[in-house]
Length: 428
Image (cartoon, rainbow, N blue to C red; front, side, top):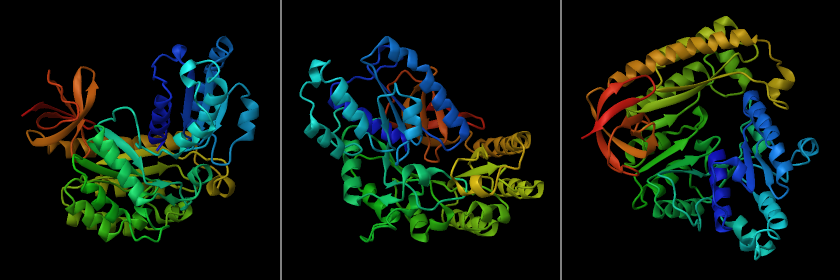
């Protein structure tokens, strides 16, 4: 979601004749887009922000902006007071204050911005993801369809920072997707904090399954993905849409978070271990070759050793293709931070994290061995360390050596080597 917000802002700035630079010392405008899902992410963002202060002192015309969840939808007066040398504080998915800082500070300095005014800013703000963009798109583009979240899991700060759930207009989404494809995108990833709740707050009858079918009909589009889902809203219609629509890739992200029913209840997740297992079994019945990813938090308040063993057993039994692991981090203002405390020691959190990490590495290594000497289609997204990098339909990372320009192409690859985190192959 933050990547999508950053891309949207970048395209607005490109329309104002800004150009991207990878050298921070050359920048006239630096935007730090932040995540605060875990304390480590917040600490990293604040450390980076402090490191930028000397640049501001050396260049008075430099604009430094803080964007995203560290600011939040209601603003952050304490942050503004603490960092008076920051020019703009922008809420998630709302770059208005950054564009206004550009108008006020850079228009008198840079000639190409001389025509920038309040009306221009309003025009830029009316543009959404991908619309009227002046630059080419990436091979794989992120397209938010649900902003905010209203589910309020006990540990999650997202509702506080991104606001209540708002499903975007399906025709607007479709228009943006077509624009992305017309400018070079081959894959579109539909995004939401709980993406399978799309449309539940609207009365037009378009839910995620119907939206997938609409996007599937776009000429020139090769692949569609969506994330992240919630078990409570993984409907039969949605599963059947993934199984039947040719452009929707056979990969589903469906977080469990914990395997113990008492911990799940304390997390306010709304399902049990058995119910989650049933959903996974149903998905695999309809799509035997599907890949499924999950999220797991270890060390949630009250998680005993026995409770952790339930999580370990669930992961060992279900053999997920992906497991995003995290140690519990109390976030200010959440239910768990206010009422449940943080009673699992950090060293114990790390031990549990490492146990699951070791288990998952073995699971994925075994799964990936099935692809050895197989032929699979790969969409190539770019180069990394001298090789072309792409992804299979099941979202596996594949590397290929080739002198051809494979960017944006879907090519069959013979898999020559498999590891737990990636595959190596050669073009067929």
